[in-house]
Image 1 (tube, rainbow, N blue to C red):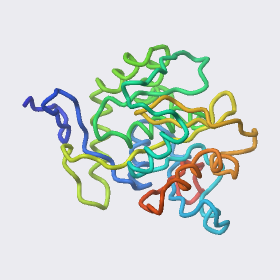
Image 2: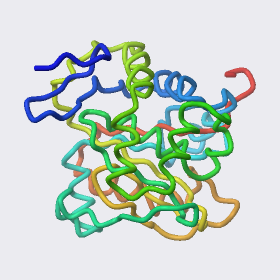
Image 3: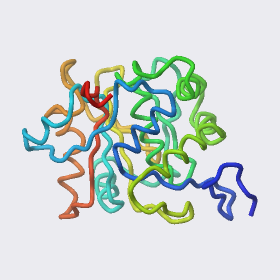
Length: 256
C-alpha cells in the first residue's frame, strides 16, 4: 500500500482515499472552518432540542446552517420514504455555475462525511458571507463553482491543503481517534437556505433536495425550517435517539 503524504490519510486496496473521521463536536467543527478560512464571527453550537424554547434559546441567531448527524438506518428510512433513493449509482445532479441555488459536492473521500457537511454549510446561504477572501475554502469554492459533478469532486479530493486542515482538526476532539480504516455508521446532513429562498438538504451521497420555500425572516432553526427538514428524520427514527444536531450561527460576542 502506498504511504500517503498526510498523516492519518489511508488509501484502501481499491485506491480510494479515506480520512480519519471528525468527532461530532462543535469545537472541532469550529476549529476546522477557521483553519479553512471562515471568519470567527460564526461558529457551531449544539442543539439540544427542536421543541423546548428554553434549550433553543441557548443557540445564538441567526442560524445559517444546521447539520443533522443521523444513524445510517434513520438516514435510509427517510431517503426511501421521501426521496426515491436508489443508491449512489443513481445520483443524477450535475449542475454547475453561479446561477444554481446551492453548491453541492459528491463525496468521494471515505469517512469524510463531516468535512463535506461543513463545506456544504459554509459554502452556501448566508454563511458564504463569512468566508475570508483568498482563504483555502474561498479558493476551493471558486474553483469548483463552474465545474460539473465529477470535476467538482476532484477539487476537494486532490487538495493536500484540505487534507492537512482536516487532519489537524480531527485530532482535537475529546474521543479516541479512530483509524481511517474503521467504517463510520453515521451520515452528516446539511440544511441551508439556497439563493432561491428554499430550504435545501445537502449530503454527499445523494442529490441535493429542495425541501420547500422559507420566508426571508426564517433561519435554519425556525419552526418551518425544522418541520421541512430535521423533523422528517426525528419522526422516522423509530426510537433511535443516537442522532445529534449542531447549528452554524453568528456567535455570541463572548464566544469569539
